[in-house]
Length: 577
Image 1 (tube, rainbow, N blue to C red):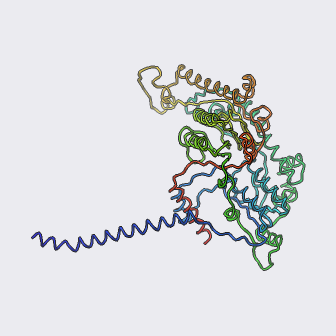
Image 2: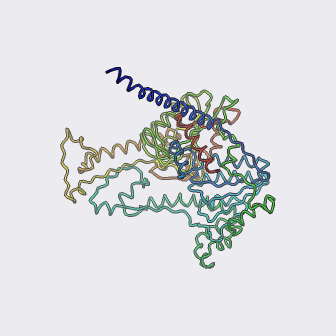
Image 3: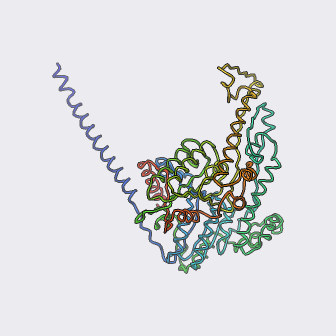
């Protein structure tokens, strides 16, 4: 009987073995195919052939950033396959590389700047691009800017062009700089919610939306000062680029509604009459103009061109090549809110940044370090941990230079104060030397809707931080002492790092924000300049003969990095048909 059943099951066993063998075979083939695809993507270098008399089309899509953001590679692959757009950012150095590279390329004859999809950018970033555009123009090549319409940051970039064209239905939307906040004190009072604020610094206004119904006079005064300083820079740059006087440009912006009324609401005609643009052209008219500019055949319905993303593939990215060199200035970029531990995208996680600094410390080829930082602050504890690691770097004898972006305030200044040199742009917002904390309690709010809390603890401090119980005077004193201690530590760090008398530090602290020019005048920064200036200073301090520099990026998982590149490749392939 057993033999009978054994013979009966024999075909099934053979079929299972065959299926299992086929599964192993197909799995092996799939693995090898995936491996080949990954290797192909990693080694793939597209051959870009530039047309003669080409126009470089600079059309940034998204916000301009200075730190490459890690993207979920698998999500990128599937989104590209599904045609779902992902949030896009443009790396500032890529734009600069393209413009400087195109200036020296004989096949590039002109540049067209399309700002329609440009998102957020800081004034110092646009100024850096503007300097690159000037270099391009000095090579004898023309720059045209064209868009359907311009917001303030888009027009700021366009102002560096030789000519600006706008769509007949478009306009230039200039309003000036302002800051508006929602204040919620009355709301919290109606909800019977108590906000307990602990701060040191008259101008530390971040907590005012919780404690007031309007902006305090001190906050208005300080904010108006730096807004005016930034508007002065913006206005003077545009006035110079458009051959206007700064006063006439400011007056034009203030009187723009009246100018629009004179032209019966026609925004493009108003912009042309105000000399903000040089012509009114739709898309096809811009194409025809560019074709004529570079001498394209009349029968063409376009003009010879190369996008900045494709042209970038013909270049070696700046600060990436270590071949044949043994001494470098390391560049670490850090952008976002400062957090303890691991940060997410667009955040400065103390653990990740500290690990990156340690790599620079151990790397014998790194002779100096430039930390390019853009942050409004965050955790004082995380800032102190980062500062301690930067001090460890300096103890090896390697110089540290800070390069401030659009903002390096509060915790950003805390971790910068001990650097050998600090650079800021005229439009950088820095300082904000102060500390605050805000803790809500909702016991009254709960009672209002019939909920009541009760508690028991081992001692009077056991329930500190519990939002459902009233805050005792002892707890209030505890939090205020902690904030005051942190503030005094902040002052001491600044006094030591900047070699200032404590009395002077207290005068310029108090939570006040300063623009770059004021910060230099007060001794909070050493020089006004950009990343390149900071690199040059770091090389000088390190005694380096050449100013070779390399980015030191946070380490990614190699496999995830490969999938990320695969996602980029698939996306480009689909986009190109």
